[in-house]
Amino acid sequence: MSAFAHETKSRVERYSGPIFSVYTDEVTMSGGGTAHRDVVVNKNAVGVVALDEVGRVVLIKQYRHPVGEKLWELPAGLRDVAGEDLAVTAGRELAEEADITAARFDLLVDLHTSPGFSAETIRIFLARELSPVPEEERHARKDEEADIEICWVDLDEAVAMVLRGEITNAAAVGGLLSAARARDDGWATLRPAETPPLP
Image (cartoon, rainbow, N blue to C red; front, side, top):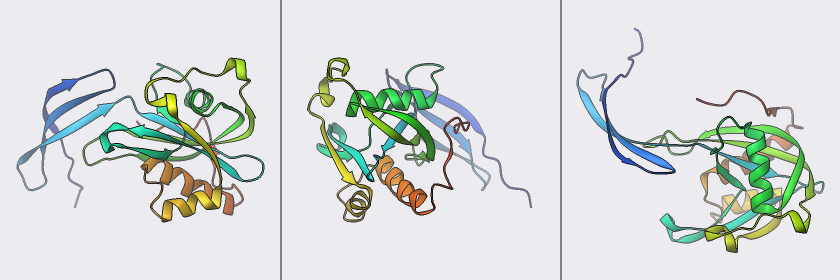
């Protein structure tokens, strides 16, 4: 028996903004009918697990309005520069949000952040061989980023924070658990930074 292929029969735009758009799609179902599904499409993102020479990772805490609180996260950001290499995007976000540069990037994991309603993907890199951004070259953070808290945490403690429910950001959870597993495997599971991304 061949697998059923869902088809989008129609798409109606409900909202279009600078970061994401919302559509209602009419999709064929395997039972013979169609159903309407609301879909969020945005620019996709990158995130970084920055690991120093003594096994610590950098975490940032910033305010997230939809949940009304500050969350521990990885340095991350939208893929909002057309054609930019994703490792370059990750390096830019790392410098802007955590005042760090990295000489080495490897691919840790690709994630669909919330596929029940969103097409968003995030690519998480492992960054190593770290250096501080010189004081005079640091990015001037504003809006929610203006009061970012930056903290260095042992990778195993960061994993414990995930398991205690102290880190709930999905990209941070996936990135930190992936980094710990990759480390335990002697980094054999890392993929090249230039591996083609998810569509």
